[in-house]
Amino acid sequence: MYEHSTTIRVRYAETDRMDVVYYGNYAQYFEVGRVESLRALGISYKDIESMGIILPVVELQIKYLRPAKYDDLLTVKSMIKALPHDHKIEFNQEVYNEEGKLLTVGTVKLYFMDDQLQNKVEMPALMKEKLSPYFS
Image 1 (cartoon, helix red, strand yellow):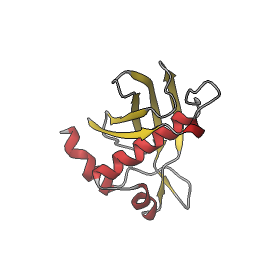
Image 2: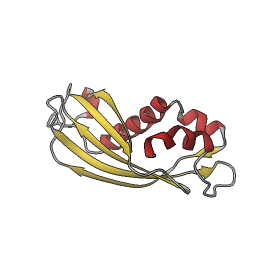
Image 3: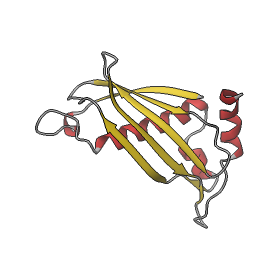
Image 4: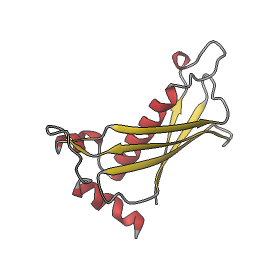
């Protein structure tokens, strides 16, 4: 299993009238977590796109357990529990507050797709090379 954590400070603009993070912002927090988890592996979304591959989100599931509030420092944990072997990759993600309380859990599925032809392709070899050591 591959796991990475990154932190995000809740900005005022991300909250609603009740000083709580607006629910739609969690999709962006999950994206930051995914992007930074790949960057920590030594591969960026930009690298993947330069190979002619895009990664559209095809499914997003979120469960809200507790609220995050303005100025909270959140930890977004991103996990890949299975090495992709075809055109799909799944990230399991969790958001914690500074006290370590679990606030939100989710699953995000993405497809590897050819940027020009718009058809599904396998995970790039470079990405497989970087991820494989975590699954041996």
